[in-house]
Amino acid sequence: MELRIAHLYAHFLNIYGDRGNIIALSQRAKWRQIEVKVDAIDLGQEIDHEYYDFYFVGGGQDKQQIVIAEDLLKKADALKKATDSGAVVLSVCGGYQLLGHYYKPHEGPELKGISLVDAHTVAGNRRMIGNVIVKREDATTLVGFENHSGKTYLGKGVNALGKAIVGNGNNGEDKMEGLAQGTIYGTYLHGSLLPKNPEFADLLLSQSLSRRYGSQNLKPLDDKLETQAHKRALTLPA
Ligand code: GLN
Image (cartoon, rainbow, N blue to C red; front, side, top):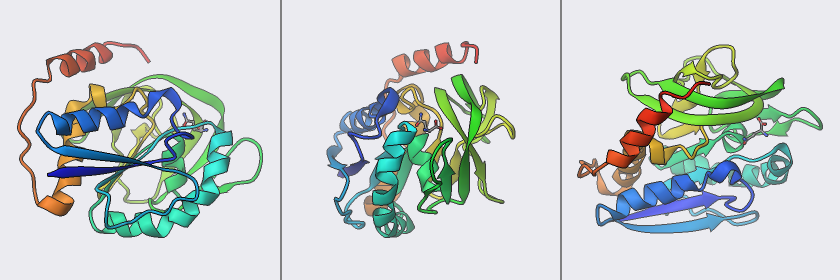
């Protein structure tokens, strides 16, 4: 089997080491003898929506978001077709914000999003910075840290990734963090997210592989270190 990864705007949206998500997902595949191909998809590059299994878009400051917002609109149709056919998208912070209908930064015009997810974001007047613990519906937890002023509001009926039991999450008001819409995931968790959240990483890996190879039963890995890091993060204050 081969996992095909598209890393969108790898050189623009990689704040707080978000590319660690690509490294973690790739390694968890390789440990299972799954081949991995990672392509950086930059400004002006087209996407073959039938080719990739997993798309990643990381976080960035407002000025980077302004640069890519227009380009992302040109990729919207391909990303919609890709996710309609079961490809997985993981988006973090700035990238997450642009998958919604719009992001209104502090200064300057509103940035049009690609409406891949039913959400919108407006810049708040305080930065939300600190450790975050998310409790998912299945009672598993996600850990990471956040650094954003954007406040994201989910559309009616759109599932959050979970409840922010420590930290702000989407907007510091409704205690929701992130978004899970089909195989599309958004989160404010930098960290990077996947290394310290191995169960979630494997969920994304199996969903990505099932697009072309059918449902997966991934061989368990020795996650001693990852679990240790996760448990340590659970003890950190906001
Ligand atoms: N510029 C956006 C905000 O401040 C996203 C920041 C980020 O990606 N960490 O909300």
